[in-house]
Image (tube, rainbow, N blue to C red; front, top):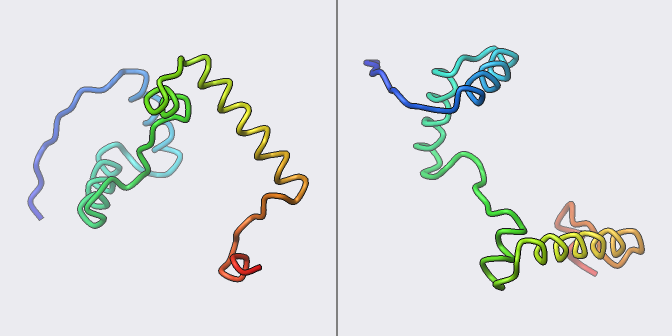
Length: 100
């Protein structure tokens, strides 16, 4: 397999932190990039979820300010946790959980 050199620029601190994580996994940056690109090709998409934060979604979808969206997210999380505690929100872990 012929190889080529890929050059890129990233933040110095990010490089240092990512090198530490990769070292703990027994990898180097080149191996990681090869793995990520291989997954990109096999999946025909990014090998990880790329999502907007809840706050960003509320701001763009509903035109609310960042502070309003932060409050809305906090309220939704409280309501979800309350519903989960009181049994009003069922956790779905298998197909049988979808039937009443």
